[in-house]
Amino acid sequence: MPLDNLLMKLRVRDEVSLAEEGALRDAISQVRDCPADRHLLREGQEPGASTLLLDGLVCRYRDLRNAERQITALHISGDFVDLHSFSLKSVDHNIMTLTPCRVATVPHARLLEITETRPHLTRLLWFLTNLDAAIQREWEVSLGRRSALARTAHIFCELRVRLSLIGQAAETGYKLKLTQIEISECIGLTAVHLNRTLRELRERGLMEFRRGEVTIMDLPALEELAEFRPAYLHLEHRPH
Amino acid sequence: MPLDNLLMKLRVRDEVSLAEEGALRDAISQVRDCPADRHLLREGQEPGASTLLLDGLVCRYRDLRNAERQITALHISGDFVDLHSFSLKSVDHNIMTLTPCRVATVPHARLLEITETRPHLTRLLWFLTNLDAAIQREWEVSLGRRSALARTAHIFCELRVRLSLIGQAAETGYKLKLTQIEISECIGLTAVHLNRTLRELRERGLMEFRRGEVTIMDLPALEELAEFRPAYLHLEHRPH
DNA sequence: CGGTTGCTTGATTCGCGTCAAATGCGGTGG
DNA sequence: CCACCGCATTTGACGCGAATCAAGCAACCG
Image (cartoon, helix red, strand yellow):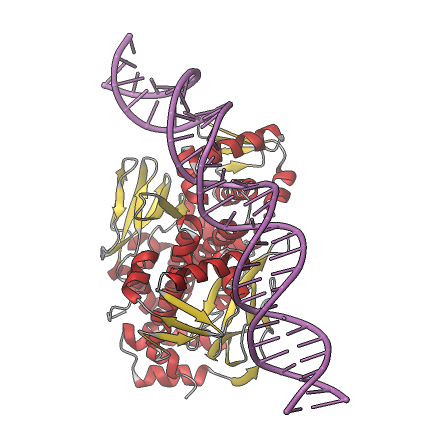
């Protein structure tokens, strides 16, 4: 079912009625597959539809002059990768797949209709925007003030929780088909230094990352090192 | 007029009808003054109202163990400092005034009513959330990949544009009643290093920051150094 | 199998942090 | 109006964490 992961994610936080589920289903105009490393959107474009990620990993990033890029968000199954394009009209960054992906297209016209007729569902979509923003805030904190070691630990803690909500992570580990280069671009390190940092985490017996597989040896110690507080992921179930 | 700055900000991007203006006005339950360095909200609280900043400067921040803080957002007159609390229910960071402020309280019940009855106004509020998120993204880029010099230049470029939208900045400068310590907490530097960086900007003839006053000597060069592209501030006028 | 991409490690450099002290400045009270 | 206090700013000396440069290795893929 294309909507499963999105619905799981939403239903952690609030009720979603069958009518709302139907409205979301009707909003999808098309489902397609997309290979890895393909742009879904580029800076300056004005898409007429938003993209819901059904499977795979997608990032949003910005390039700077010195040819480095900063990945500003990572998206997993069930995330609306550019819901904000409905609201902002133009996008101010690039969006690309990191693995082969399955994506659903949601025309802005149908989102508009939802905002005209379904206040509660609109608030849920708005909530998703706020959730993305909360995650971004936490990345700002990492980039600004956490050491390489804590920053690295933190992103793996965050992804563990986010993936566990859609049944794709356990306490002991999860699959994450990213390269060290890509992860380093998320956390503002060079790939070389990330590699050394991963070695340190491994040698300390906290976690391991090898060939797209995260193995967590000591979750409490890892979360403590990262100062990971999942409050920012807003896991509480509340009427919205 | 309490709403002037918010309306100016919105009307740069879209039409706001008189009825909508009235609805916003009716949403305000109270206006009050607040001294500098006062918390408006703390991590974990669940406020029943959002706060619209009418005058002054407010920041959002998170503290880490090592007693350092990262400021994740700066708000100026006309900004909803915690519109997201309506959507997220609990706040995951601290919000405090940096200067004496005048703030308006907007009960969540009235925001709820707006979402139930005014789709277009709801979309405008949602847009404000997305605008904040776009600014946060740009801060992530700065924190992750820009040098101290570019990062410093960038925040002054951004604030110049944001303040100019509400008539509080010129090409040549603006008032900004912040300390170097506070600015350094925004851009992930130490106050000492920011001070050296400001000296460098001054010696290069680009800009000066003294006693809460920004003087810009060479705006094009400053923006070039910062790689400042205002696209992320979404200044285009579009139907939402 | 050879080519390509990602991972790993070492040597070195450098940007920014840390520590410490001096200077400047606005506010307060006598 | 001046003396003093506390905080912000400025500067210097020094150290460290992460970047850079470079080379070798492992894994995958046609």
